[in-house]
Image (cartoon, rainbow, N blue to C red; front, side, top):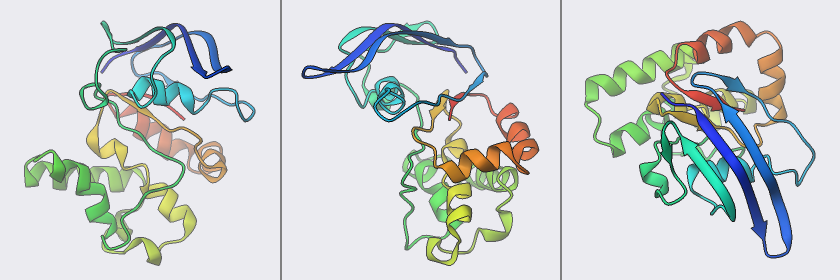
Length: 188
C-alpha cells in the first residue's frame, strides 16, 4: 500500500503538451475519480504512473520512491483498460486467474483471490462462462480483474461510461465495500 505523488509532471508529445505541470497527491487507500474533456491528460497520467509513458519533466512517486527510472514491471502497478482485453478462449475464472498464474502464485491463493474478487464484483455465478456468453456490462464487471493481483495502485484510464454509471447507481455500496477492503490506491 502506498500513496502516489505527481510533482510538477509534464508530458510532451513533440510540440503537444498532454499534461502540463501536474502536481497531485493521492493518499494511501484514497479513491480518486478524474473527469475531463478529450485530450486533458486523463489517460496519459496513469500511463506515466505505470511506466508506459515517459515523463518529460517532473517526478512521480509511489510511496517513498521516485519511479521515473523504474521499469513498469517493477512499479507494482496494475492497469484496467477501457477495452476489456479478455481472453475469449478462457472462462471468467481463468481470465481472473491468468496474471496470478503468470507470477506463479500458489494455486490455493489464486483460488482464494479469484473467488473473493468474484464475490466483490457480484459475478461468482459467471465463473465458468466465456466472455462471448456475457453481456457487455458483465464483461465490464469482471474486467476489473486487476483487483485479483492486489497491487499498490490500480488506475483505470478511460473507464467506460457504463462502469461509471454503475458506480454511481445501484452498485455503489458493493463497489465501495470492495475498494475499502483492498490494500491499494485507485483511480477511475
